[in-house]
Length: 217
Image 1 (tube, rainbow, N blue to C red):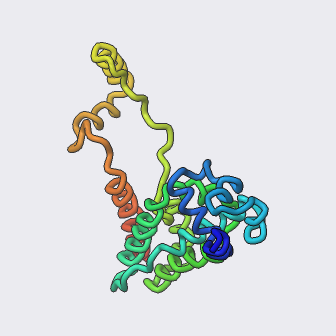
Image 2 (image 1 turned 180 degrees about the vertical axis):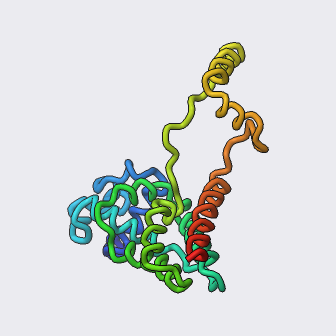
């Protein structure tokens, strides 16, 4: 039996699955139609029977990841259900590190993406939130609804040399005392941030604020 006979037939599902696996392993930048074709053992032209181009392929990959987000277990409170759903999204996206850049670069929401957003809104509507509050809440959640956020302008990294480091920190402390106070006196000073804990903390602040607005009428 030839290798072509043993190979499963090429279809859209197999193409998208292979693209997700390739991006998981090598990153989104490594995903080219030629590289994917080599992975599948076909010619690049064979891929175009199933996806129009690389951008449409990435659209399908995003749909595949979003479809992996499990529905949260039933909860008596809307805010608990919303929190669980978003944290489930974070878990799904952490399995696919490339997905954040892919989601942020999409120009149009697909039916799969719209269904996920609709589910979040339905959770809030079922909790009795008004249309105005649901609208503002979705804007406030922004990328957090997908389980990620992006830090803006990180602070400088101190020099490795001890003497240079001490001089730099002293200068920095004089110019920015509040930053140094936070960095040196918080309960986990000197430790790397726990990204999951920081995400959950910010999410809780947002959802608690939404809940209080709702409770206040």
